[in-house]
Length: 78
Image (cartoon, rainbow, N blue to C red; front, side, top):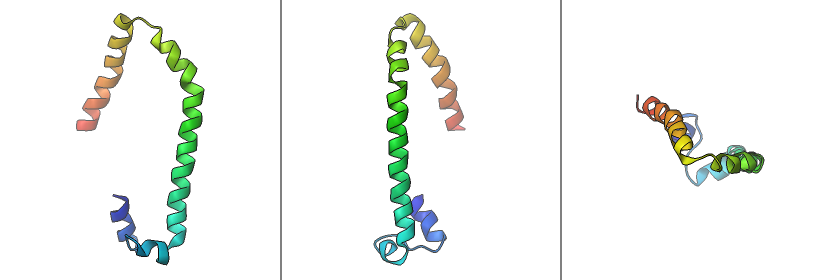
């Protein structure tokens, strides 16, 4: 999808993109690095909470997960 949208906006997809529009390439790399760092910080912050969730008995945890995940799957299909 990214290559297709870049092609529609006038940036050639492929190796010429590095030559003709280096700003776009730098923006893509920067956004990937920033997103990775943000996910890393988020996971460091949520590790304690996730460990606490594992202490909940399975007879309670699994039905709760089913209630949360099932609607997400049906929303994605429609």
